[in-house]
Structures are given as structure tokens and as C-alpha cells.
Image (cartoon, rainbow, N blue to C red):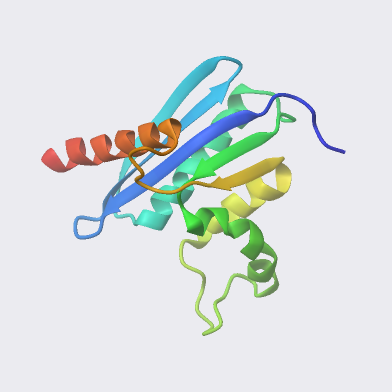
Length: 155
């Protein structure tokens, strides 16, 4: 049975400085004519962690602040995040180990995001990254993450 309520639309982005291991993530949440921005800077992190954190934290925000039965649309430029939906059954079947027998990287975030995917009505949209004339909302979250990174790296 499909929910017919107006969905919550979320734009997410994350980035990290590979040498300094400093990263930032942001999510812009649109619902019922409101726009909410959540963001954070983290240390000892990676690009994929920041991309996943943006989505995870946005869904947690939705869980805390809205009804649990509202559909969610996640717009992300992260192929890693968007493709997790298609990889989740294989990851679970392999008990989160790679073909080489190593644990999947970022296991804590991967399992959290998979749990969210399985307990929420979520649609993922893959958006082109860093396109100046692309989706204005995606551009806004991208610029927000870049600004966070700049400000933190200047400290």
C-alpha cells in the first residue's frame, strides 16, 4: 500500500579533505512550505562517511520532528549512497564482508542506512554533482558543504 501524503524532500551532500581528514555534511529538508538546514563538521572522516551521514542525520531529523508515515525523497549526488538500495540484499547475504573477506568499510553507517531504508518509505534520486546550471537546491547544499569545509580548514 502506497502512502499518498505529500513527501518530505531532502537534498544532501558531504565532502572531506583527504589529507586533513576533516569533513562536513549538510541536508536541506523541505516539507509543508518549510525549509530546514542541518549540518555538521566532523574530524577523522572520509567522503563516503560524510555523504552517508547527511542522509542518515536527515532521516533521523524527520523521525524526530514529523510523522513516521510520510514518504521521503532523498536527492543525492553520491552514487555510493544511492546504489546502497540495490546492494543491500547482497551486503546482508554476505554478512557485510567483501569478496576478499574484509568487513565492508563504514560498516556502522552502512548498517544504519540500510535499517532506515527498510523501515521508511524512501525514494532515492541520483543528481549530477557540481553542475552550476543544474538543480538549484542541489547546488545550494553543495555550496553549504563547501563553505563549512572552508571555514573549518581556516581555523
